[in-house]
Image (tube, rainbow over all chains, first blue to last red; front, top):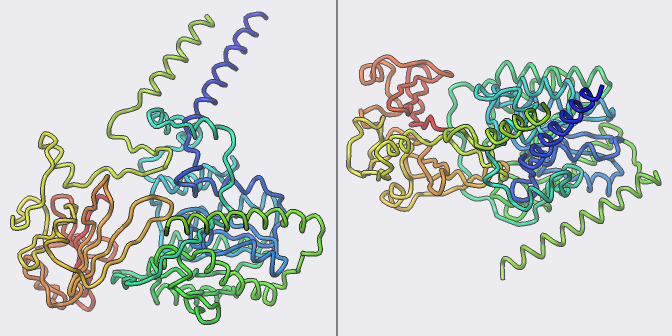
Length: 345
Length: 193
């Protein structure tokens, strides 16, 4: 009996040590590449959202949930991540439905251009933040490049052990928790870099979206339908990468065939008031705060009228929660404007 | 017995910390996904670590297909700075930051062609060269508008990949897109990305 206890005690020590080592060596996404922290932040939220966004950087940099709440009383969250692939979007939606059922899901269609797994670094920024579930396991299997191994996602220590030579104070400070980097999934940038000399797209040999991408688009559509969720497709107003007419046509056809609302913000610059000399921080790839607030304002009106989403600003508890969020949003905005001014001078 | 288990665990931990070798792509704290290095850098590295310089006039018998413009050799995976300097002011220049990661992809547009670059360590390397009209030809004499027959006469049988006719050489690809048996696009592409 004593031996059994000794063995168990030893095993606990060993496992605990390995766990701590893993926590230490995993990237924290708290300094330079903060986008890796986006997916995990969702789990700390109260799960009572009317709208969930899924997609790549064109959702988390171009739409502001604060504007949806402030101006329309719509409670939303962006489950976006860098180069989020469509199968990852599907599994993230499946994951989300384990916690809540929104009235509407908004999906950015740029990811349709990717039919196969792309890069491990982007995979990890999306997948590592997911809590373990069948959805996460399926997402990993769908996403892995040829060089990757499933076990490296189960035990990240196997992948990150080489980071020991790069450890810094941040790795210790944020071993168990990281500072919030988003505002309900929105990544704020206030700086300005006007769009100019945006190149035209290259000629492609085949403009058709791939079968795998379509299969997951169908699965997203079906999952929303099964759960009585209004699916809305969007194309964010990013000038680069180039959005081809041939891609636009395919999405329009799909939306029509499946009775889905599709909004291409690239065609709504006048209606939204977008100005690519002031509303982008990286020459037209992504919008800054000014741009994001403009197109979100437009989207909010659409959601109210087309999706019939209620105004929940009268709900005391939710209003209190959002008061705190809006305060943090304004503080971040001021901080960034201050830094931008300081950089000029 | 407990000590043996503990010792084995510590040994295993040390082995894990030692790493698996130099060739592994490391995802660091800033998650910089270091590329495995260009074909050009790998061959340069094989020459006892000397840094190979782009030769502006040297022909590319062993370095894949290259484009020559105004006596400037434009080669995929070569360092872009000397090439861009030699070519002079582009018609336009555009930078595209990747999602999340540092480093910029750069696009230099000239009258008849475009040079795209990617960051690699502390340099920009040529990722692609795209011919934009029929006023410029490949070094082998094929230009936009030429027939499939001419293409095959010059380069031989191609590999069909994603709808493109591909001629691979020395770790790079020369890619042709056809429409109605005429060349409508010519691209020199790196395979390092």
